[in-house]
Length: 66
Image (cartoon, helix red, strand yellow):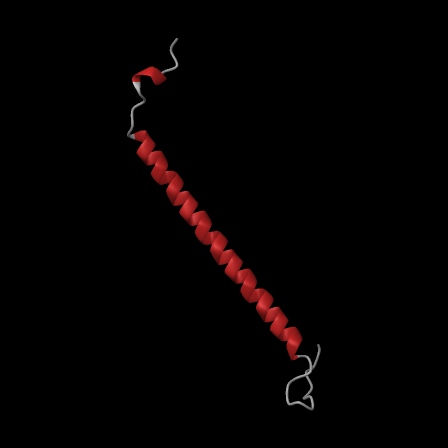
């Protein structure tokens, strides 16, 4: 365990390591939140488009019969 000692300027000596770890953790949480929202929006959009396409009929010239 690393102990933090009071420095001459009044701050803690090993305080920067803790701040870096907190900053990295908060950045990772922000990226995870953005990716989660993008995944949710993409999923909803996919299902909405599939439901919209299910109600449509293909034009007369677009059938596979030749």
